[in-house]
Image 1: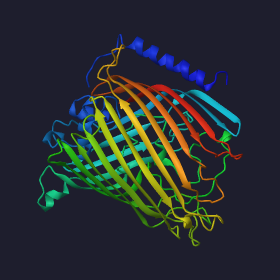
Image 2: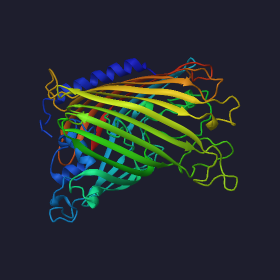
Image 3: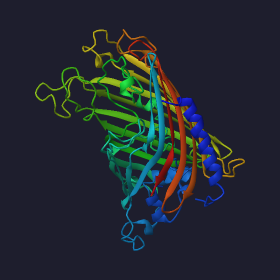
Image 4: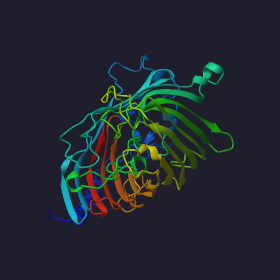
Length: 482
């Protein structure tokens, strides 16, 4: 390429701040959900978001935990105030410029261009009192043009579920208590910090997507001929799962508006698509289980207060395809175990700063890798991240409301490899993400933000010659929803 990645990043960052400075002279100073909720309740997105969608504030988290309902009669789909012109659907995408570079084993590949991330078609709400739903369709759009963060290969219902809320009312609980809620379908696990609600667009949480044996970053295949070993366990913490969830929350006396929350989920492994030992079949007929418990003090721990939590998963993954039908779904056999356990925290200060993070220990049983790998052993690794978000009420000097700045550090540290011939630190990850985001317009109908994000990640010894893989990505674009 004509310019190095660093030069391109400096040039585009300068352009971003020039654009922000020029825009603030004419930017609307409105105070301000998917926009469908904003339209329904005639509010702006900062009612539920901090201050930049999609991250939720305390009120937004309560609204979500109550099944997208406030308990009023005029929010019901059958109420006369909900006209036939209202439809609970929103669309979101990001358009702009992306540049990336990848270096491994002394070779480098760069790419850049204009494009878009793909598109999310979102629908959430209530079907009737205490029955909520969620649908997210992400079409596979081959013309996206971005190397990372796009939906080129998706083309699926990312989420499709129904939740029965406030079930304790049938056993003597209050009408507005939410200790027992039952969700069924495909949905995001109650992870310590929702990746769907995080403001970074170009970079995922490494801990949520790491898989032993597979190089963490594989965006540019032509420059990424890396060593690997097969792992039939395709459970990805950050992916939406098919399952059944029992969840609830309650305000705890003496915690100054602090909340106890729990989630217990049975996850079907019928769509697991790992590398099986003797065929192309995929999926098993067992269940895996995930759970999380948290307690907050003085709020949800997002814009005020603090929160601590523990979480874990235990399950099995099929290692062999059925001899009767190798290509059939959900008939994989010889399931072997895996487990995950972790802790998380979140703290706030000055109503503008939010520091949060998590640590997780993972274990994949030796039998997941044997007998396909003669030198198989148990794979164990630790993942962690810490993120600092700053959402100033008024950005210094530029006098810009609606700003958000983020720094996040992700890391993976392997203890033992599933293939004992691989060195211990193979596939260790260090990732640094910087983001600045300016929501210059939000209304009950539309939202748009100017978004700049830079990531540099180093993945240890995944090259065929044993070299590290260094990847850098930069995104500058407009993230908008309506």
